Amino acid sequence: MADKIKCSHILVKKQSESLEILERLKNGEKFAKLARSLSVDSGSAKRDGSLGYFGRGQMVKPFEEAAFKLQIGEVSEPVKSEFGYHVIKRLG
Image 1 (cartoon, helix red, strand yellow):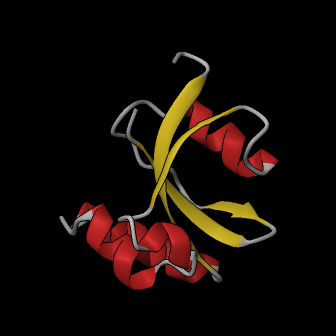
Image 2: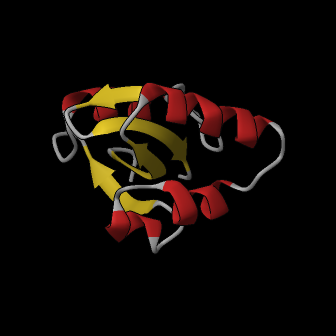
């Protein structure tokens, strides 16, 4: 599974929203709870933000590059894509 990783994300429209989410995570709020209530990606939001396992070439470039650089348990800075701003958490 070295070529596949497992991530969750929270997708929002504005950079300011993504920065606010990072602040809330730093203050101890749970990633899954924030994903369910704030993410505009309704499909993954229902699963606590989980995108499951994916390999290279399956996600948009900026998202993929950021996700593959994360260590397990690490949360990204906001990542801009054509869909909005992602806060990504690597799970595996």
